[in-house]
Length: 221
Ligand SMILES: O=C(O)c1ccccc1N[C@@H]1O[C@H](COP(=O)(O)O)[C@@H](O)[C@H]1O
Image 1 (cartoon, rainbow, N blue to C red):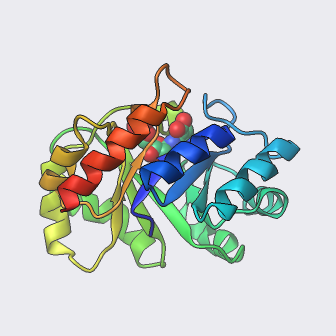
Image 2: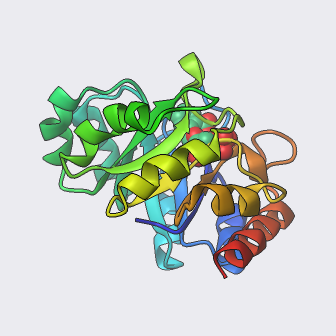
Image 3: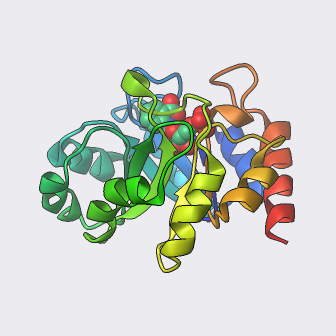
């Protein structure tokens, strides 16, 4: 599992900013409605991915409700290290995705607000038990992700305390001003951010990426 993932990079200058800030992973977004979308057929996308790989970054492809066959085509064209399923994918289809041979990260999308540990467990457990890494994000409805909305971090901590062996990543509405508090409250050991390191929306800011990584590392000590 990555430690700090900057999701939705689109340019080599974004990759340079991620590397110099000390994050270890980038997200390449293949959900067409997203402002962070990359065309997998474009040579520039494969070049961006190769540039991230050459820089030692872990490349996570973000997909929403795509078939395993289609994801396999993107992996072959672009080159990825892991697949993030961020839609309404079903556990019953997991074998098809696992046959692609890359680590799978499933976004467990939770309602904002206080949650019982049992509710988080009910939604996360089927994926954990089938060898998926999990990323906890807010349920953003048809937008699916990148919404800038936050989870109730205390609820995640109560669930995590009961399942200390489960490695998970925190997403949803993180930015440099709140990531330290989010880590302290939730106990997250991995974080993922998209909109919180952008100004304006859809455009990564090297300053915000840097501040985000500084605050994250300070929270981890
Ligand atoms: O970033 C997107 O546009 C996106 C679209 C569809 C699915 C996932 C997407 N990104 C993921 O959403 C989380 C949360 O984003 P944010 O930090 O709240 O803006 C992000 O970490 C991405 O992995």
